[in-house]
Image (cartoon, rainbow, N blue to C red):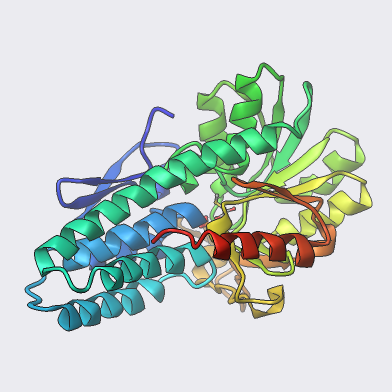
Length: 353
Ligand code: MRU
């Protein structure tokens, strides 16, 4: 990818301001956590794995110059940052994962002096970025094994390089399939109301030379019925232990349509997106966003007179999902069992932090 979605540059968080795409590739430097929180809330930086990185870098940014003298003070400071940044977007579990991983890192090193702990926090945040890059390539490799030459894939929202440190999850699979010499065509849902599909996914895919066709969200059913789609491939914001998946609003609709049309429906995500603490999807907190995102379009008031219900995500029940593609492999139903096994394995190896 010819760009970095989010990075740490000389004590600042540098992000692509995704609200400006595809017109301008503009960067925003966050020098304080207030600017970062605004960037997260307004989707200047977005997508589950990128939010995990933003959370981790946010802790680093927040504590870097704070005058704390000992570990209890540092811990309090980190917890304050976690509460503040964690309240910005509730659905993507990676945000909380990234924040908590920083607290765990500090906790593990609490006997060291403050300067050393701060240095270790910087190392941890940078490691999260590198791990995400490696993880996306493994998801790409695992997922590409499912892609056939000539496949036409339907995707929703943006689960690409712009939603991660780079390469992406669902889109990473498409990039890898192309690298393997397979011809792949992609239909992209617009993804109302904020148009991540139209603005971001098409921009990304076309830079990679992938044939891209933009459709209105409500065209998805018809293109499936016309047998134009061989697979649906999307990302995830949070996966429950039973395989229910929260992802961008409209994903559930696609899953039902895919089942009706006998089209495989795949989720691609890192294991950090699986929330093993939640037995089922009904407990996933779903973000409700401002009515103005629906009442207005490109700054014009379209329906200022009406009540709005603007859910940012929906939950797709596990029964609609053909497979969950992760860096460790492809998990199949019954997810209660396959994900349980993964969780046990994860515990045994006691994942780093
Ligand atoms: O509201 P957004 O743009 O942050 O929503 C993003 C998605 O729904 C993505 O599909 C998801 O985070 C997966 S990103 C690899």
